[in-house]
Amino acid sequence: MPRRTPSPPPPQELPRVVPWRRRRNPLRRRSDQVRAWIGLSLLLAALAAAPAAMFLGGDAAYRHYARTAQHQAQTRHQTTAVLLKDVPRHPEPGSAEAKEARYPAKVRFTDPEGRTRTATTDVQPALSKGSTVRIWADTDGKVTDPPLSPGQIRGRAMSSGIVAALGVHATAAAAYGIATRILHRRDLAAWDTAWAETAPRWATSR
Image (tube, rainbow, N blue to C red; front, side):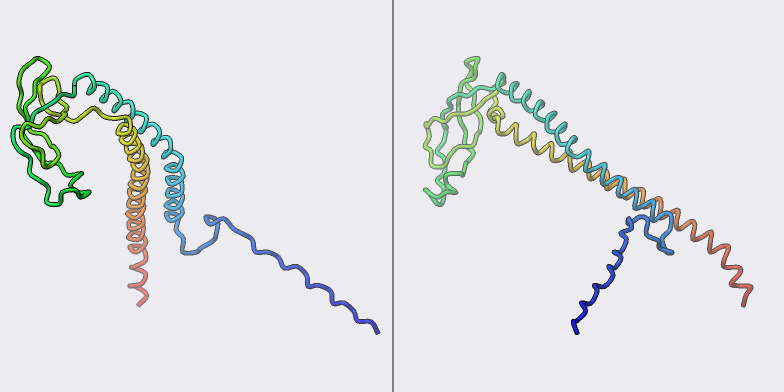
């Protein structure tokens, strides 16, 4: 007698996936649902606004530092200065640290108006008195840093853009914290009201 092939079991119904806000929970309060929707809305708003804030903040910073660099280039100049004293030697001459080290030293130079100036600037170690170094000075004859380079401008603009994006997220987090605190106070007030109505019933039932 031929064997009968068993029929396959009926397909089981797949569990329904209910959105997390629509799941029933007898312990869930209305304030809990409001708190969750506020958090989700603020998160989506922050994710949408952060790229725009980064672009706008970085672009504004780039324009600002570009104007600053242009002004510095017009008001600063590079000149030659003469050391007035010997510069100390580095404890480890020839090392990588010695190549990066700088020591303050007094120098003499001439400003654009022909006046002799003295100032203090950072120079390499082991230079002898009378050696010449290149320095940057402003129109007042003060030693200063060189104008901002294109790399420095881009770096500062990127940093400003990142700070702007982080500021958006920080603002959203602060708004969520304030909303949560307000809802928590309302919950406490509701609990006090409910307890004031329930407590006398417990006292009279004894």
